[in-house]
Image (cartoon, rainbow, N blue to C red; front, top):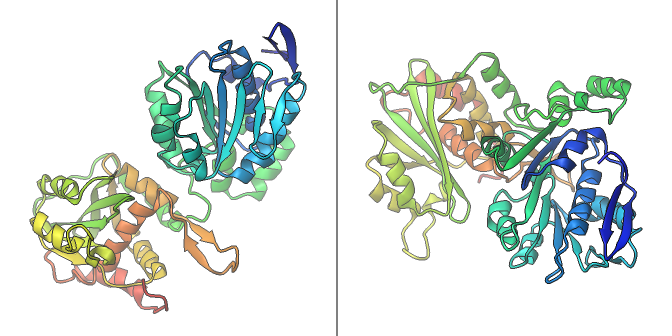
Length: 444
């Protein structure tokens, strides 16, 4: 595809006024069912995806039922402001095409339907429908479970294909999808399109942009780095310190002479996250991290009890004292019955104080790279969101990274509570709890 795309539909020649940029030619020429695209800002990804879906519809000769394409974006506004404009431009020359502004759809003369979806309500609209081709754009901003629980089933009827695309934003579910695609190369094509690999921007503009952005922001936005800290990351300095000093290493051995604690963030319909920490000398060894969703509490206690560790205690969030409607028992009571070591509730604190406690704790830590990969990614991705009403009102973004970050926060705050336990030195307790001297209103 080196010139304008030409399609035959209903015995009429249809010309789409699209000339692909050279770095997207391999994308359009791919014969794989699944495509993964991570592209730098201003690479032309939205234009390429729009035309890829148009071509997919027009090449599909099935008439009963007619083929369908879906573009899924993070919001209705984003879909309308970007893709809708491109769709009307590139498909506007198709004879008898029918655009619906209210539904954000384009009905082609063949009967094929191109639909745009955006926001959380999009997934409910899509359930039960069939699609022949779908694109999930800005995947890092979409629901992490949307592909496997909604989009993938919609493609099953006619063995439809999909594009997963976006820009890097830390080691999140978009990054996990990249790793999965690379491990399943027989079915997936992976396109990693960095700014220096394209001619989308003038070299002078690239250099000027690089000088005006922080190194981590440029690496993230233009070099597709998933390791660079995300914008507004709470623990950016601490994670850079750990990287620079090689504190995230291949393997952290468990020392049976010292006890282990677990730190929990418990979700019912949301994720549950658990850290395993061991104090050794003046260091804290972070041995493991585990996260799952939709499991009963006994699933997690089996994970914990199956380990060979000698436990000192298990730190739970403050809301573990809430009673469950089904049993009338608190999660604290349930876990006390299921775990072999006593549980402790994290003391009340502000989120700000808890973040300071983690910042004080992290420089003392060594992480097992393999066993804590998901948790470390959560710490890198835990970020602030500025209030639209008051820019000084900064709160954490509740996303995929929140659960692992919150679990470690409860552990860091609770160190003062567990200071009498064997193996936890007063020097570590003092360093962490010193960050909690400032009292702020709004106790959680």
